[in-house]
Every structure is written in C-alpha cells, then in structure tokens.
Length: 79
Image (cartoon, rainbow, N blue to C red; front, side):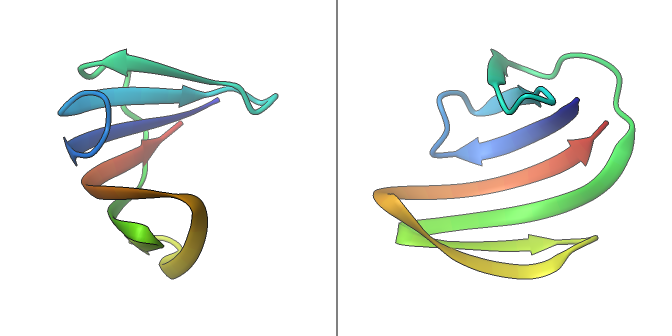
C-alpha cells in the first residue's frame, strides 16, 4: 500500500491523501490520514496534456496524459 499526501490546486481538495492498494485501486480522502513513513517528496506540474514531476528519489519525469488539466501539487510519497 502506498500513500500520497498532497497539497496544491487541481485536485478535488486543497489537501488530500491518496491511498493506492496493491491491486492498483485508489482511494482519495480529504485532509491527511494515517501514519507518515517518508519515501520521497515531489513537485507535480500538469499543464494541458504534459505532466512534469520532480521527485527527490526518482528525479525528473515528463509524461503525456490523454486528458487536459492544470495542476500544481507538492506531495510526499509514503508507505
């Protein structure tokens, strides 16, 4: 199980916790929930279909999505 604690605009809530199960299903909760076991921190910038992620563990990633959005998210990846 992975947890993502995020602050920023473009998601459903300004502060949220996303929990990703081993089977790939996801659950989104308003606010910060559960224990934090730090893995990495990241900055995600989504403009149109392009997404740029700067992660403290994995470095720089750039991808293209099928839908358009505008997001600016600061997050922490946790176990």
